Length: 304
Image 1 (cartoon, one colour):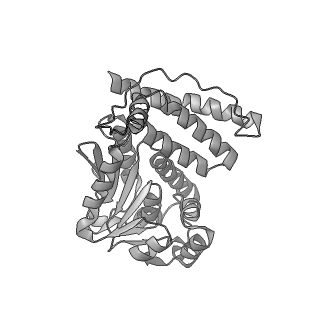
Image 2 (image 1 turned 90 degrees about the vertical axis):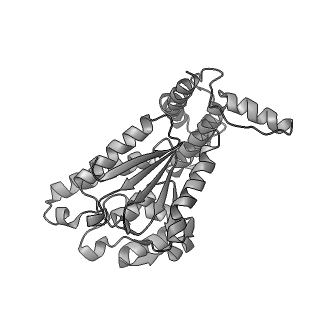
Image 3 (image 1 turned 60 degrees about the vertical axis):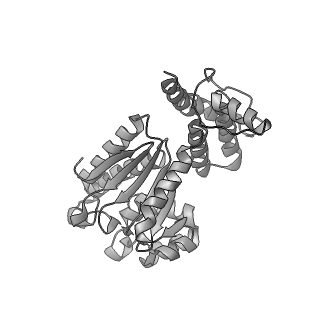
């Protein structure tokens, strides 16, 4: 994993894109390294939240032009499909991921940040999708995620003009949540990660999954997703303890992420949420074998 480093700081995992001599540009090996680091971070039960940043003065300056310039159409499609698969893994990673954008986030770098759940930026950060100025389109999800995050008009302007914007402009259009002086960026990212890690992790992960899946569907189906995620939380000790503490005007010292009953398949009548029975059956089936399974595996590990 020469080009992607991983460091664990308590419950926080810090992923650093580490190819500074090339401004952390993405090539096949960098993508493979990131793919492997994500697998290792997911398997590490001690890591609850990830921060993704870059070494040197760049977050990720884009895909490696030296590698791409001689691609055939078939090779370009294969590269794009693999990059998209890694970024989709990041986007759907079960644990929250914070992008700490320390410098250039252009092309594939902007796309990488958009696959994260929350984006923080240094005052020195630059964002953009410059591909059309190079005779190509965005290839790692830029045409899809940017419009979802900043709206179609802003996305069209950024992509079709190939212009770059600074961190404050990125904040104004909603591409990043906060902008900090460079020397404060990682500290602020750690503060945010610690705040997330302090909460009940099954609820955190179910909330992330519901938001992500809801973005891809209609309101009725999204509400059905949320109902299933809500139900999963009631199989945890944290739900019982926290709600009881609130009623008794007490505080919870720490969440235990402990299972008190096995989450059974949540087949239930979803007609109140979804007017399409076939779709609702698929939703419940999907949650039975993904979301609920993930929660059960996580909880069973914590209970050992």
